[in-house]
Amino acid sequence: MIIPNKLKKGDKVATISISFGTASIFPERYKAGIEELKKKFNVEVVEMPNSLKSHAWLQDHPEGRAEDFMKAVEDKDIKAIICNIGGNDSVRFLKYLDIEKIKQNPKIFLGYSDATAIHVFLYKLGITSYYGPTVMAGFAENGGMQPYSYECLKKMICDDSCDIFYPNQTGWTNEFLDWSNPDNQKIKRKLNKSCPPKLLQGCQNVRGHLIGGCIESLEQLKGTDYFFNKSDFDGAILFLELSDINLGSNYFMKCLRNYGLMGCFDRIKGIMIGRPGEFFNDMAMLDSFDEMALRIVAKEFGHPELPIISRMDFGHTEPMMTLPYGIEATLNISDLSLKF
Image (cartoon, rainbow, N blue to C red):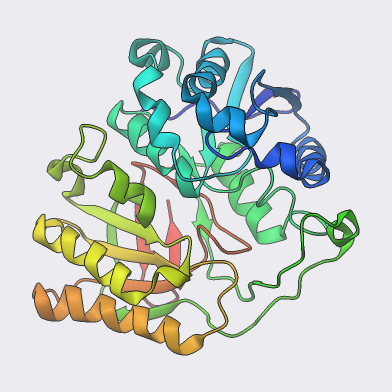
């Protein structure tokens, strides 16, 4: 894998809207994220020409979103591309991207949720990208970026250390504070100490390269040339998360079963499952997701030895770790930590 150059103070960073035009709907939230990005990382932000256009325009012009991405790729002064937020149809602009120009200009790409489509696209080109915070969900966290989110991201995209360690942190939040009320931006959301990461099965540490993303986005890629090859699962640690818990554990079950039918569980080294959805309150529902994972992987496909950790801090949760595609990671079973 090609690892893009690390981000340094004074570098230029491009912000883009890959799917939803949420920046135009909640401008104060967007502004807060931009200011936090500048403050925490000492970078110059370059807003791509179409990034702040209306949601209706962006929905009707996937080629315009692709133009922004390619302009950022081709600009030699821009060192990173960061998503404003996710959405549900970034897959629509993949056909407009110039593969050769992207290969010639590898740079940091950061985002999660619907950004999965671009992450997989870059992975297939042999370029590492980063599943982590966006401008409006992460950088713009109420009262400032969560320390754990900041530390994980800084270690991954800024520090030159060969070894990066993510401890199992305690505390997360799903408190709802309406983005349309600018006063809420000053209120720190309350951290919940319950529901820590949970080892579902497995007893040995495992090492493998990371692949995965948001389940719903991956489902849109399956059966296309944009999805992973079967060989990509060989020796991998698969990370999966669901953006909306209301889709239900049956949806999760069907998606997992599909990976089983593709033979993925015969190839991978372990599974990491993110805490599903930002605003869930039904712990029984969360337990049902864990039960489905065990049922599918251990019982239906005969892999009771395959390590599975659920309720991990990536994706649609806060704070969140930053996960690099294609990079070797060691999953420590004893303390549920990660080392890269």
